[in-house]
Length: 223
Image 1 (cartoon, rainbow, N blue to C red):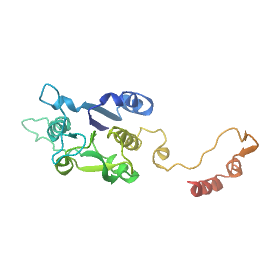
Image 2 (cartoon, helix red, strand yellow):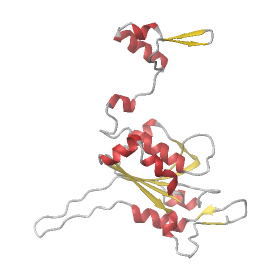
Image 3 (cartoon, rainbow, N blue to C red):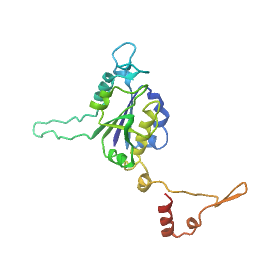
């Protein structure tokens, strides 16, 4: 099992995402676990303030380091060893990574997803507004990740992308192992011929041939 923990100021965004389809089934089968954490829980003032003006001036607000630090420390998985008089407690190092999402981060890849799929816990820090105090990237996050060359309103969509890409690689999450890891190739289904105006859109003949060797070669060239 892998534990995903998402730190966000908008946990409700994830409600439908985590409760439908394969993610819902994966949680029910205890293949994955997803925790949603409202950053405001770790604030100390009555207004539950999570952001402040940036030093040096500039537009917008920046998420503060204090509540993020407290949140990460609070939700990190910890091993509790059973002690006895005659047996020394077993030591086990949990494999964890803290991920901050930022357009300035390194790109998410399938190879990175495979690496993360071997972990015990992934903690995601979802930025908002003008970003996150840079000390979070420097001293709290293990990696700063971007899912593409564009700017989003926050890190929540990026967290969803990582949860899906990593979950697919956990044994048992996808029924067919080869479906979980291969890149998609062109796919066709019925009808064999689809009439679109004056056009007759046909399924490639090789897929109707029954020759699995030729089909395999065709798919290699059409990825």
